[in-house]
Image (cartoon, rainbow, N blue to C red; front, side):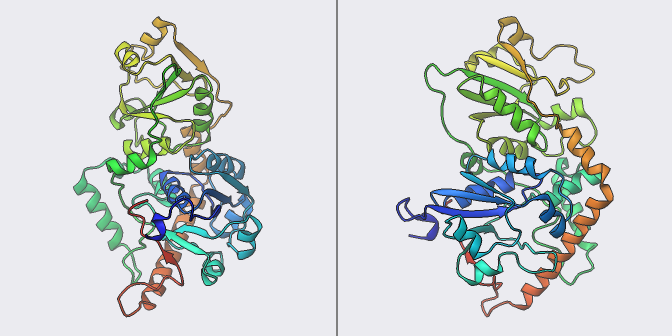
Length: 387
C-alpha cells in the first residue's frame, strides 16, 4: 500500500499546509484536497499581509479576506492566522501536525531560500502535484493584459505559448510553474471536487446562478447567505458566451470549467449546473425541485442590453424568488480595479517571480541525479494519481 493509499487508521490526526492563498483559485483548492488525504484533519496556515508583501509583493486580497476564503474551502478543518512564511519544525509541533504538505513547485523567501528547507531536512515534508494550467500569477496576467487567450482556439493558445517561450532570455526555456498554460478538465476532476451528495426527501432546495468569475469573498458571502435559506444549494454557472454577452471585453477572466471547480470547492455548495440556462425556466425549477431562487442585491443584474426579458420571471410568477444581501461590497469588477490601481506593482511582482523560478529551475537542473531526475532536496514525492 502506497503512502497515498493509507487507511484512515494509519493516518496522522493532523497535517499542515500553508501559503498566501491570494486570489484563491481551484488550483489552491485542489492542493488542499490532496493534502487532506494524508491526515484526519487538515490545518492550514495563512500568511499575513506584512509577510506576503515582504516575500512576494503586496497581495490583492487583505489577510482577513484570505483567512475567510480558506476557511470556506470544504477540505479545510482549521485555519491558523499569521502563519510564518518559512515553515519550521517548531510550527508543526506547536499545532500538533505530523508533517507539512506542499505542491511540487518552489516557494522561496525574499532572500532566495526554500521556505520548506527545515522541514524537508527533518523528513517532515510531503509533496503533491500542483494543478497544471492555473496560478495566481497567470490570473493576474490575464487581467493586466486584458487577454482573452484563455477563450481562444487551441492553435491560437499554442502560438501564444510558443511566443512566450521564445521571449525568455534564460538558459531555461521557461519556469514550469509560471507560464502561459491551459487547464484541462476531466470527469475525474469534477468527481473529486463534487461532494456527491443528493438532496434528501424533504430538503428545501435553493438555486442561484451567475458567472462567479474570479471567485472571491463577495461570492462566498453570497453563497453562505443563500445556503442559509435551505438545506441544499444548487449553483448554476453561466457559460462563457453568455457571460461575455452581458459583460463584454475579456470577460469572463476564467473559463467555464475553471469557474465550475472554483465554486465546487466551497462548503455551502451542494451541486452545480454546468453551463446553466440564462433564463430560469419553469422546466428548470421543476426538474431540480427548486423551492427558492435567489439573487444578490449588491451585484448588477446579469442581463445583456439586447435582452428585455427578466431571467427570473418564472420564479417571480411562482412566488419563490427572493433577493439577499451578502454583506460584502467585493465584486469581480472591484477585484479587477484593485489590480489596475496597482498595475505596475503587480507587473513587477509577476516578473520578479518568473525570474526567481527560472533561476531555481536552472539550479535544480545542475543537481540532477544519475537517473536524470531532479533532486528535490529530501522531498517525499507522493503519487497522487489515486487521490
